[in-house]
Length: 255
Image (cartoon, rainbow, N blue to C red; front, side, top):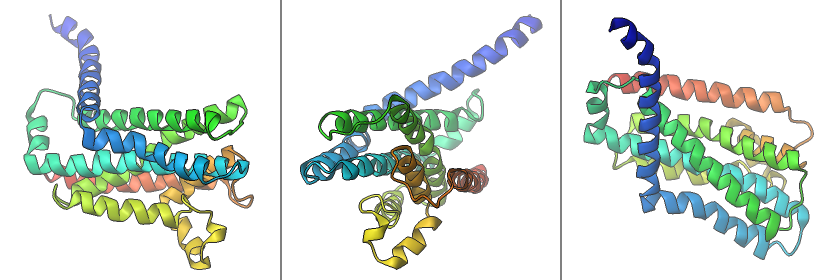
């Protein structure tokens, strides 16, 4: 019996991870206040600014495809972690889950998996709109790499959201997330190219994770700053994610 239990333990652990992820995804998919803005706002903004007001400018359509992808996945990560973790802390759900016979990492794995799935949907919707209504033409490898950049790129913003959720309560989290979300999008050049904005904004932008994600996406579509290094952008995002996660984990461990 002990041998059977040892053999089935890994399977049961992974099943717990997958079931927790499935429940988390369905819960947020059935929450209109999260699912609708997360999935539709980037698409609506792209239709308005990348298609209707673009007047057939191909570079603008490609630029906004890349940057609105960053804008979309940033919202996925910040709101999925920043708001929900804060609310669940207030409700005592985290303490309840720690008392359950489930793997300790299943809670964060489920939220990360959910964020990746929503980011994948946001990126796919934007790509379909760009290829049809926006008239954007990219090579197959560019479409695939841009989609992958957005899907993986949600993780730094999820880490930042987790940090927010570990620091503030459920009532303050939405306000703090919006204070981070919208100014960061503007200061990172997601709505307008940095060369069209005041010089001081271009100096601030490299301090923000959204800028580095956007530069990676812009490089895929051929519109990035030629002087920037993809390896540098990746290194910044990895270091930023690790720092946010480490601080948030310490905070959550204290309850």
